[in-house]
Length: 105
Picture 1: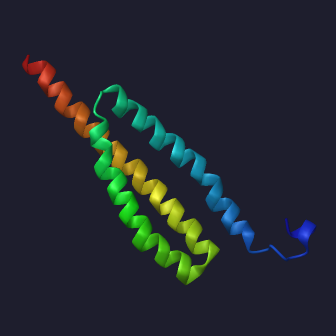
Picture 2: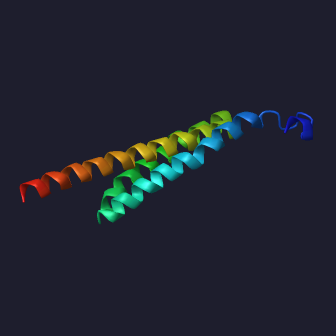
Picture 3: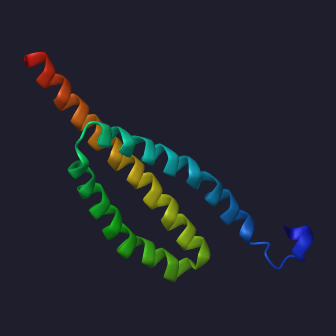
């Protein structure tokens, strides 16, 4: 990029590295959402989405204002990781509860 634009967009290298991680986070999070929907428990997704929305409106906006495009990229990466972890926790909670119910039956 630096060769093409003569250092006009030299700072974008960091953004490209951050954004290259995003599809993996989104794919992992979406895969877990499909698993939760397969368990027929879509209401378990609501708390995770609420936390993500609050985090975006507070932490994400702060980073974007403070650090500009780089802060927005880090905020987006943080929200993606938080979303993936939240969905994973919900999925594990649902499968653990479901497996204990099937053993008792």
